[in-house]
Length: 395
Ligand SMILES: [Zn+2]
Figure 1: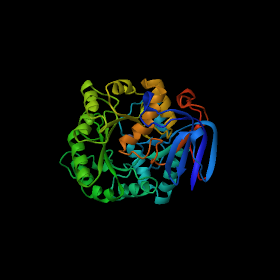
Figure 2: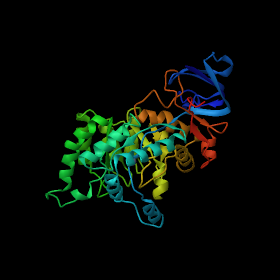
Figure 3: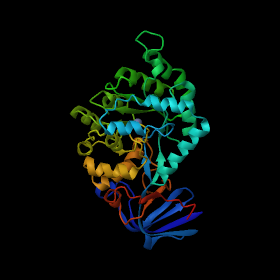
Figure 4: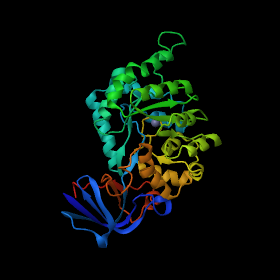
């Protein structure tokens, strides 16, 4: 079955051509064949198809690629957010609250929560989402989180090294110390997780006593690679640190947060452009009232950047890529076009995917449609629900 999509007032292809790489077209049409894009061009030249869908002049863009989320969790941490807004600083400790609630939830409860969050994302234009484990932190609970995540996405990430759980916070050398947890994460937990995961990730953050040092993070990443997983890193979130350099050294696909970067970090990311993407998560800075990363400096240095939500119960419980785009424009100095590119093609690169994040022949037919004439409205009309994934099966 082929579908001719017409009435596209503005088509953002993100094909890398033209200003900001947006590949803008006006009065465009797209032909979708099955689940792939078969043709892109001017409406006037459009070929015939089995059926036609007219979008009435709307803007269309690639569905958003949310390359960083933590959607498998139970429990509520809204009081922690309220306390933080009243002045309590974030140090990564509240993750333990989500761990307890997640362990206590049944498979069906977790599955229902996960699916509701994915649906919420899709309703706001997101068509690809990466989902991490990291609120189980036992062999069985991490494997379960990834098994459930794999029901909704191919982009599953083992994050057993999210924090050292409370039961491993004993004194060094004691039974149940952090070295014992590291052995578990790089041993039997990894073994149980790997069949359900594409990626391995680690919270490399010397500024949190709950997170992992450079040497611990390297051990986690190398063990993950040896088990066949590709690498991602949480780095440089709470202060200057080794995460970015480690990610570049190991050729990780992405280093995420990048809130505190030295000039040497920016140089390293520029040298690794196309290989290691700097994924910026401004919803976290918003929700923790922290300074925003210098996205402008990264782009001007030639780094590859992506935008994602980091949707999680602690530091950013927003699933909204349009909100992230608006923050990137308002708070991080990106143009609306640069922000859209980073949220689609840029984010796809951070997942090493070329079949999503762009509206080109052969790509997946993952389209977002706006109740607006132009992509500028995503940041111009912040907070207004104008974006949604285009569902051609309903049309
Ligand atoms: Zn995260």
